[in-house]
Length: 624
Image (cartoon, rainbow, N blue to C red):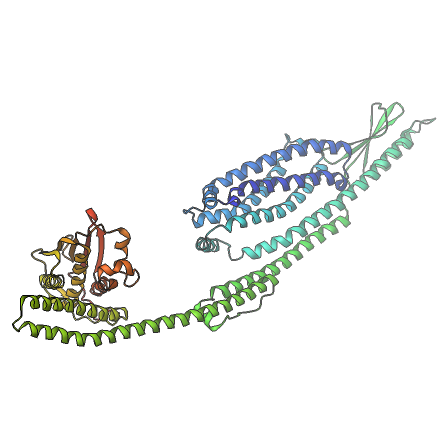
């Protein structure tokens, strides 16, 4: 059980909510100072911002769980290390952080647009304050997406480390086949460089504009209050012409003058939705209303905005160059790794170029060191293979030489036994000579099996196919086996289906293989009948020869070891020649284009099935 996969979705949600909360606190802490907001605006922003923050947190939670639904089953498979995971599941896990970041960024833009609707909590602010707050929030919120993406990508990496290597390679190929995949590394570098520069530049421009606007507005508000008190305060001999002159001068400076009802208190500033500001100044029995528009954007601010654009463009060019260089290094490392085959390892690691990024250069250094280890391993493996092949050749030569050396004296023994049988002998002597002859034929068959097994293993077992009657092959094998088990309580019966066509076989080899199988079947039983049946059950293109033995409780593990010569000595002894007979029989049948199989029957018996082709191409002349 892996807890990493189980905690993946909750950790993604925790990362997003944590970064979102921290970004909100930063906005609340610095927006009033950066944007020079008055206390009334700060109080109104607090409630509106808290509502938007809560709505965004709910939206993040919903989106995360919706996107997590398709990967719920893959995460469970990774957690329990169960099969069934696909490359598509891996790519979905890989793409989860990107999808969440893009969705959250798009949702932030939508929410920012919705704040300009009449029903929005921000509709009570003037357009300038509203836009400044939204732009400031978007700047910090967009900057917060970068650490959020990095942390979520780290969590995804921990989960992807649980994916099996073969499946990871398949998923990598699937990701590489996606549109824009070749330039993805370059694009990420571009965004990684452009985004911070753009954030800082936009924030700096916003700060400059806010302070410039605040300074000009404060100056004009103070001017409006002082002028109202000085110019419109009643004096002896009310000078209407002087007031009109003041109003005209104020109009020339962008002020609109109006008289209002009497008001108490200090001068009061009211900001309108259109960006205008109105200063209400109490004067005697009435109040003076001086309205002025927001200060125009100064040439200095246009210069800052131009610098912001130039800095962003320069960062984009620099990021693109860095991305292109890093992508070239990654492609270089990928090519190095993919060409590290056996031939290249034996020749030595080939360096196609020099990486310019330190981490890629270190990776190439590791690849080269790993290639050295592979070279040592490959050299050792080649030597071990050569040694094994030499040992196999020596064993084959030894078996062949030994078989030839033993067959000469043994043939002489059998020949003299036959000559002795022609002489007058007593019953006891006849029985002794018969035993010598039977055991000699068994030994001769064993020696021939050893010799032919060595040839088959070396791929040099020759066959001479000719058109042969199936009955001749079956009956020859049955008669040879009866001679070899003379005196046993096991009987051998043969049954041949009429109408079986001739087969293209090496008669001697086919009889040898069938004799080995029948002899093994007889040795597996202490008594009873071994049935040999030759039929064409399914169609006329295959011959089936079944050898059914009443074996004594043959176990499944013994059945699976029958055809493996020398590998299971204990169970192979009762099959004869340490399993060489069945192993050689399978080789002979496969050379003829057939197959052998064995299965357990009821009561612990065994059924051998030998399949041989009736039509089609003739078998090859060699076992290779």
